[in-house]
Length: 441
Image (spheres, one colour):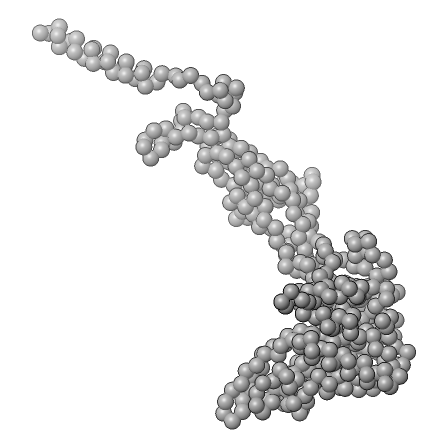
């Protein structure tokens, strides 16, 4: 009995040892393991939900971040760098440095697989990389560069090089918004940036405000009120025209389309006061001739600016009426242009007529036909097409719709972020013009 008792624990121990050996038997290595790829390990690994040891993957980057270019200004001022990595329990630490050879520093709070860099934060040329750490080691991404593009000083030359054009000139378009008591354009700086053949296109007048509407004069910051006509002469036009002429800049003159009887559908004409496109044309020509800068020998661009305006509310007999100023349609534009031509040529002046609109508007189609096909023969095209609006020439020329049959664009507003030192106002609408833009067709 004593010997039997002694043998029982020994037998149990032998059985348990055999079970352990069976559980720890080494398997035949896979081809990738036999080739030396240390990608997956179970020893020392974590447990899966079933309690079986889970695979621990060697930390490695499988997709690298890429360098990026953004604008200092405009619609694309950020870039997102992204890395993909294999591994277990991964963590990320983005680093930056000012340039090659500089010390790497950690980017605060940048601990995910992606990092968004902003032009407002990082200087052009800043380099980034990410260190990925896992259960089995770490891996460092390749170095990428963050380039921030500033507005160009030479848009005309840039466009010539990009599109094989010749004879281009550059300039800006201005209004009272660049002649306020606290921010006034320096025309000498404009001339220095624009160069010998530079130009400026000035707003002469606008029909954007309804009749009898109170407003604040941009040039003086004083309260004023519209009269019985829904038009106002730009308060800065005379001063800007004089300064531009003195600085040697060529001039252009534009009229912002506005309230007319066809737009005002209220029975009492609460917004337009019965004003017409022909009335607008007569006022434009009257102010143009009265100023003295436009003479019988002038061939300056005379532009109808076709854009929508803001919504206004008027009250009549206790009831409120709200209407938004829409852009003029082709029939209204043609009536204005024809009237301007007749009034000028009849008085011995020349009429180098233009319309201004966006590239999308210019190329608009209705029932398969270009919406502006009847206006294209009457006026040349000043087109707005900004790309990412970073102050540089966009990657493609503007869409021009029916003007393709009339030489395409004559003036191209390529950005609203033209910037140069000494301007006194910050961002400006920048334009380039073809060599014949000041020639009457």
